[in-house]
Image 1 (cartoon, rainbow, N blue to C red):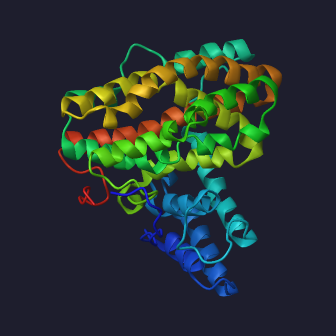
Image 2: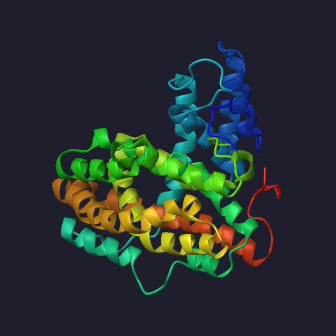
Image 3: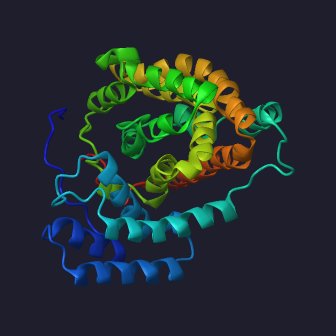
Length: 350
């Protein structure tokens, strides 16, 4: 297992869109017009024909790779592609279909709250309730080496970059909301101590169970619901017009974190793992109990009060977080209950 930077391998295409995209990304720096045309045609067909964008392996991988250009590392990419205008135009077509389906499918409270105070109440209702987190409690009751390794593989796609998608929002907010977001993100990044950066602590958990902690090492193994969970954050974070949605997403993310992490830590301890593995989860039990109030009141509530026009998107972002992460959790739980791998390949121990 490693923390040493290594060259990122070329991912495996999952259909005509990702195949054409990878041809562009790995091809000559002076991309032939025909390559862009092939990609644009594949995208046009995909957005028209797919019945479920959130479950579409080809579309979700393609979006992930296009967003990866803003995060890195992506050493398999030739040239400087981050601001390639043709790729940005193509990404916009995929994003339009992705956002449209999210807005059509994600349930939001009706009627909408009327101000920041009502929004906070609505968000506590959305993220609260009597039921305990199903995936987390199931893992705590039925832990196994294979299942917990798969769980970490799924989570590695986002958590090795923990906080980065939400940090796009910092420059797009003002006043109380900006201060609240910075306060939360400061904790996520270890309060200035590199060894306490949450992504770093998670990497330690991966190494502790024998997994490779290299960014995107397991990309080929994770299915569309896992990629969609990361892609929805990137969509919201990279568009200023969706700054309300990224604030709402983070608020819901923090408000639903503390209790599940208690159960995740319990699952690892049941198998005899020590603090080197459980530290990440134990840290979030305490930290996110504090973040919950900051995110709900000082981030989401204050933003709705200061910019009332953003209130619907704040609520949409929160609801999208719960919905898409729910799809990811439901996929894992369904597979494990049926005693089969939740990964695209059974080779979970790469």
